[in-house]
Image (cartoon, rainbow, N blue to C red; front, side):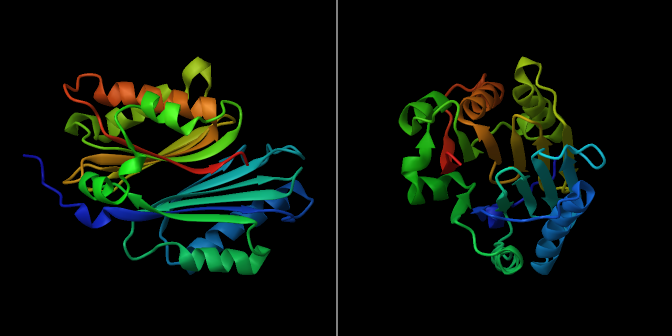
Length: 271
């Protein structure tokens, strides 16, 4: 018998997206890798986040002088990613936390103390409860990715950070095997192989998955109990993001007899 989970306390989480310009890390490639990792670890631990795993791209020992360097973390509260481009000296910092106790504020303050204030910061409430979303942000709800695309008018070649929630997910689609297969197929379209994928299960509540490739960053967290939803963060071009969302929508709702409800928010654009 499946254990019933009341995960309603995670109904409203926090999303943060920051852009830092003129950030200097060591010229030595190995030292630069370690400095970025240290920045992420220190500021997460200062905020009492529990780090379950971290994922480097393109990897220790295989980083070119001008390669964009990415680290992502799976937290017990979901995920964070840092993306650093040594050519532009720009750092992108994105966090999703479902914890009602930890909203990332201390992490943000500690990061600013170490590298200076961001040129752009966006903080938003991440609602994964359908009834709450219907009351608080009905303008963000759509019945298809196609409808959202027509309204949002995302440029196919510009960069975006998008926050998406799939509501009313069938239980069989919320188990970790289904989610991983679904996302791997959606993210690897056109034979785009991932650099790395990583996942953690929170028994009995939820599942977190992160994916990094030259084309995408994706971070997913599921809510298989009372909420029956999944939150997906995506960073990439508008065309790539919409393609992923359409494929996930098809996999989740292909047998659904009524219109799905999907929340899609453009967190940041053209960065």
